[in-house]
Amino acid sequence: MTMRRIVVVGNGIAGLTACDSLRSAGFDGELTVVGAEPHHPYSRPALSKALLHGDDALQAHQLPEPTHDATELLGVSATGLDPDARLVRLDEGGELPYDGLVIASGSRARRLSSGQGGVGQGAGGPGAGGPQRDGFPRELTLRTIEDAVLLKERVAARPSVIVIGGGPLGMEVASGCLHMGCEVTLVSDVKPLSRQLGGHLADIFTSAAVRRGLRVVGGGQARLVDHGTGTRVVLAEGTELHADLVVTAVGDEPNIEWLAGSDLLTDGALRVDSRGRVRPEIVAAGDVAFFPTLRGVQRVPLWTSAIDQAKVAAVGLLQGDAAPEFNFQPYFWTEGFGVSLKAVGFMPVAGEPDFCEPGTGNDSLLLRWDNVVGSGTAAAVNYRIPVPKLRRLADEGPAALRPAAPARAEPARA
Ligand SMILES: Cc1cc2nc3c(=O)[nH]c(=O)nc-3n(C[C@H](O)[C@H](O)[C@H](O)COP(=O)(O)OP(=O)(O)OC[C@H]3O[C@@H](n4cnc5c(N)ncnc54)[C@H](O)[C@@H]3O)c2cc1C
Image (cartoon, rainbow, N blue to C red; front, side):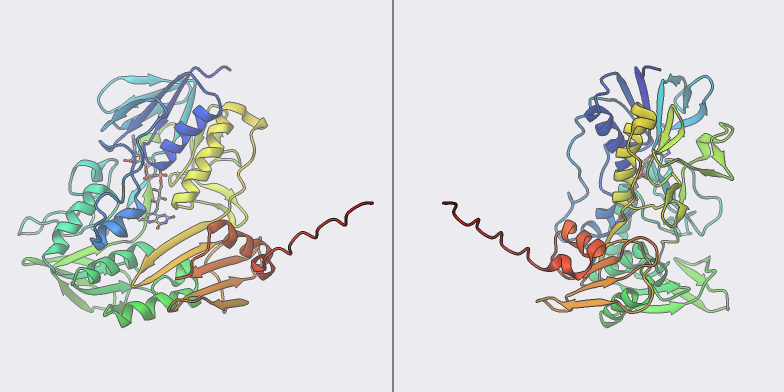
């Protein structure tokens, strides 16, 4: 069928990229984007890096103004979907009819406090657990610009901080709080970052963090309990920790509640095929979607994954089986405690690297692991290297680093 009206639900990077890609692929019909947050899309990764570190980066999260010429319904949430009638229901009342639908509703921070969550919650409110007696939220999380502003305000007073969660976000928040002069304890059930990166890279970050003063406490199943003006964290084995401020970074949950009853979910998950399709006229991309990878069907809640999925899904919506399939090439970066990491390839990586080259700066390393599935994984630690070159190192091995031999001059012909 000819697509004249396309609706995009979600105005994060996946929604933005889908709109841009639909236009680049020639879609000149009516495009409407529905976004629960009252802003244009912005960079979430910047919220826990430059913005939190306070390094004069108040604008670091801004992205260029959209040029896709869509009708933007900002501060509006989709509350339901009727896929047979091809209608999206809105919280402000009314319905949007579509010929094609892009689901890009992303995810939200998972919380330890009960009774939290819900779409768009972080957009207007404080994005935090129930208030303490002093009126401050008991559990801060970091997902939206409002969360970042609130966290920055609280951290400015240099409170003692407990960060729960040893993944990249927890470590970045801990690094930002330390940088701002707070005393910081990180609670993690395993060595921080080991689940995401593997032991070798996790060691590099954890040693740097401890050298800079981070206190790391092992322990899972943390519970939050009100305690005067602060919060008590109780760990499974009974250990109690106290701090002025508790920030949790314990994963994310896809925003799929608005799809309840639509028949699009399989075992509670939104799954797409290799062209981003849930149905021929419905595609999904970004943190909300499970998609096929070399390591099985999974959600990969990362920035470039959202962008790459959205590009494929937009063309999949317009061209169906004629569209190219998604060839997922993992790329990830994080920074904290004076360590910056760029990595290409599947992670975590097991054991020691097969290749290790020191760079010129302090603690600067270029590393590569041979993977069993797919090509290798290459990681640059405090090492300046363009991402395409890092990708070649992952794919081709160290030979990719050697300069290409100069082309030999053709002998002059008589
Ligand atoms: C603090 C932080 C740091 C990060 N750092 C990194 C990093 O260093 N590297 C990396 O690769 N990734 C990082 N990520 C992850 C990355 O930001 C996400 O993978 C990416 O933003 C996902 O984009 P998305 O568009 O799929 O979802 P989202 O960014 O979640 O956008 C979805 C949008 O849809 C809206 N929405 C939800 N439900 C509805 C509805 N029913 N109706 C209308 N709108 C709705 C939401 O409000 C939101 O605005 C970070 C994430 C955070 C929070």
